[in-house]
Image (cartoon, rainbow, N blue to C red):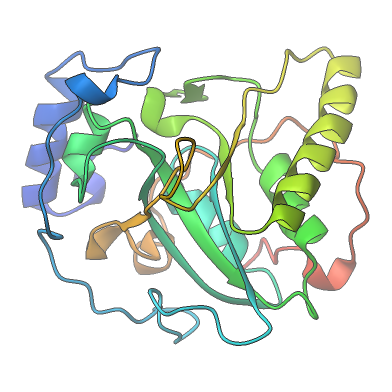
Length: 251
C-alpha cells in the first residue's frame, strides 16, 4: 500500500514483514474458521480527537447527525475525502466486514482477518446530504475492481458500504444501480461493492467497527506527502449534489 519509509521505522519494519516478505494477498475473503483469532481488547491506545476537525472520533453521533461506514481502498486517502466535506462532523479509519476481533493493521494486511479498510463518516444531513456523501464515495474510487484498488491488491481493499439505517441501505442500492449503468456505458465491468448493515447483530452484519491505530488516523494531515492510492473512474455519478458539499480537494 505504501513505501515503508513513509511511516515510522518500527511500523515500517512490520509492514515489510507482512506486506513485502509474504504472499498473503488473496482473491477471496477468508472463512471464519480460518481467520486469525484476534483478542478481547484493542491492543493499542487512541487519543480519540480528530486532528483536523477537533471532534471525538469514537463518540456516538450527536442528535440529528448520521453515521455511515465505507470502504474504497487505502483508507488514508479515503478519509481525507470525507473530512474535507462541509457538514462532516468527524471521521475515523478502521477495520470492518471480517471475522477477527480487535485486529491490528498488519493482521488485516495479511488477508487472514476478512476485514476491509474502512472510513467512519459522521455527518449533518442538514448540511451535506447522504446523496452527496455517497457521490463522493462512488466517484472517489473504482467500485468494479473486486479485491483491489489500483496497485493495492487484497481483500482488505475491497469496496463496501456498511449502512446504519434502512434509508441508507435504500440510497446505497439506488445510487449503486444508477452508477452501474453509467459505468457500463463507459466500458467498465460490474460493480462489486458490498452493501451490508454495520450492526454486528444478524448473520450479514459487517460490524463491529474496529478503530485503526493512532498513526493511521488522519494520516494525510499528519503526513501531507504520504501515499494516496485513490483513483476514480472519471465517470460521474448521476445523483443530485451541491457545490457546498463537494470536497475541497486543494486542502
